[in-house]
Image (tube, rainbow over all chains, first blue to last red; front, side, top):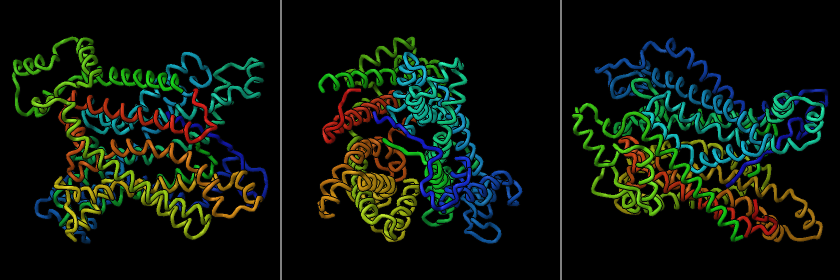
Length: 302
Length: 308
């Protein structure tokens, strides 16, 4: 098994000469380094815009995402319909805007839920060791025996396709990564002197976990959270593309690509805009995650 | 070494049995089933009961599982609901060649492009070439393979008519899928190669070699490459089964009759024996690859001891 371990040095500075050595928190240092990464800044701006679009989607266009217009089907982009209309005459731009909602929901909820499950389990496994460690490691092995998309496909099949079940299935697979990271980290921290000292002082275990181990894991988890979002966004797009995610009439970019099916060779606007949005949002979230990895100085060794 | 392999094989067997227990029980306990597909065609209670007794679905779940497990140990995964005239094993062997060819060739393409670009970038660190390669790797790596498939079909099939858009008629049908699948994967390969080579260059033994007065060529070939190869091999070998299972999306876009397409079709039809069979087959393939990777790791790196 390729177990991933990670080493974090939250306070370390790569190029000291670039900025003055005044007292700054590690997070402020990280923010400075993050800002210097152009792709990361693009990612941040893009996701900000996407979040605004998701909030204000109903007021941005005069159309409804489900309203069909039999007289204006497959219209090419014009002033009236800046991204054209689809085979039912629905306004593409409205659908593109509304599709940001499932995308963000899946991306953020699955990663948050994954952290809520994975972090406690990983800490218990790494810190307590023994039977719990054995049990949780078996569970992690079980979920690592298959790539996540197969598990998600299987679960969505069993639970019947819908956005809620897609989120549930992705959560069931997304806790594994953070659990493994935290397990490795608390396993290595456990033997360090400050933990022994804390234990000797009689500090309760839960306090050692939350006050001594969790802060050490924080940069790693922030990065893990960010790195999981592009994967989840990709998952939502590809499963909706296969017809196993967001159900019509609610739009999703992947599903719009699937609907483009037999039309797109003659009406390329049907696939240009959804695929552009999928690619740009994966790029934006990936860029942010990469920027965070550099800024927080998370080192991955496989 | 022998004991290690035996222990690992037992571990794989345990994981597979747990996985099958989990997937089997889940599929049998959740309400609904293959007889629900196409519910607009009304089915009488007798028809459903006949279907259930034909596939043994009226038995208690634990007995169904034991029967399934006994058969599965001899690689007999039963009869698919949607194709009663075939066995699951037969369908897997019939469709595997397409997926293996697609996955293998795509992995090869990703490795060739990725490793050459990564080496090129690492040989000229912090230069224009380096930043161009890094940018290319990030951009290409974020394009989902099915989006890439659409773009390729649009230009090379619909516009230029150079390649067929889909289906299977011969090796020429593989050209576009392999590019669509392999090219995005090359981005990650290039980044990892660059990182491995850069780390090897920055190490102490390279500085020693330089101070001994060895030429750059010898240092690159004898010291940097050999050491950089270790992390590269161990992370690129699992790429092959990953590409074979990951081809599901690309097989759907191009209508290739591979294992992945059948997995998706069976998932939509709730064809449990088929899905379970393919899942177990893939899990076996992936676990064995990881085992081979770990053994190889010990072979190419004498410093690694295979214990635990």
